[in-house]
Image 1 (tube, each protein chain N blue to C red):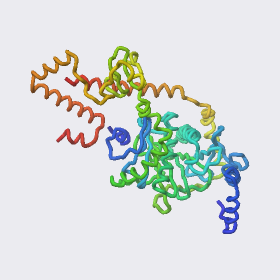
Image 2 (cartoon, one colour):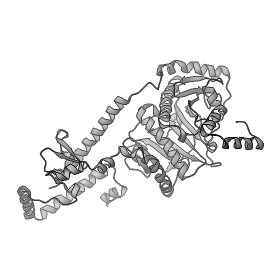
Image 3 (spheres, rainbow over the protein chains, first blue to last red):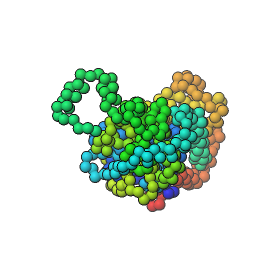
Length: 177
Length: 285
């Protein structure tokens, strides 16, 4: 209870599901910035982006691209926005990571622009230096290939699902006199 | 970007007509300020780079620490970016988002992409914006509105087909229908019948006893198809089962009662698993 997006996953909501697979869903919510907005969310409950594993981040981003294309093809907007509200301060309303695809038209009344700040060279340089130590710790992100543990995880979840199915079915079988 | 006069535009259009796609791409790259930044011809405040992407500070940021994630190759909008690269950009964004939260003690971040001028795109290079947020700032905060169910369904109907087509080629094969299409059946070494994979009996076969049969080997073998394959009812031929049926018949009314309750139980279980609202409503009525 409590997570609106988990309710969508459990089909306990008015949202309509466009696509789903073992890790992700593409849905149309009834609470949106603009009609035509489409939401991509992982099946599993991750509150913020930082907690979402690589494989699912990748999957969601690819879906974001595909949904953009599908929106272009069907609703024929003049543009689309891809938006992630991450964290309470980031405007996140539901504690479940999601990517929003927002179809856009000239004069649609949505304001997703920000007033550009004028900053000095020194201020920018300071930001670079502040970020440097933490960014260095990341190393080369193309080098990270966590495929093996990811696959193991997948197998685990799959076998779990199977077990659940078995339990459910064997139980219902036992009930038949 | 700079405005072209009518003449310049015409000239450019004619030029473009006579060019190969590769030449057009090269021209785009030449014209693109971000391509020049990536190649080092224009100075920038670089935060991170690897062989696929390049991350710089926005010189007119929405907030302190506003980052621009750029693919090294030139793409205009998200749908042109190859899947692998797009995935990498989002993974880099996640890692940098964490850095921003830590370094600037931000209360959140936004990922933002604009595809097309109507969406606020200014440059012709795909950009993934990563913007640190503080509670209380009103960046990108727009009220969500409740739309009626008809509209939700309209959107679903409009987009669903196109999306399925786009995903059909790649994503669907992962799902179970492929196994059905291959018509593989399950049985165990000692079993007399074979089953579909999703059959309840098949689920009961312990993992170590499972034997997979192709359609041909299943039909040519001495094993009989389960009802899940043939669609027929199971003939109650075994003595034990017969006698059980007789007993139940003798018991008369008792037989129907447990059946009902088992159905109810199944229903209850369904509702626990998040069945339709209708199902739940029926349980209460």
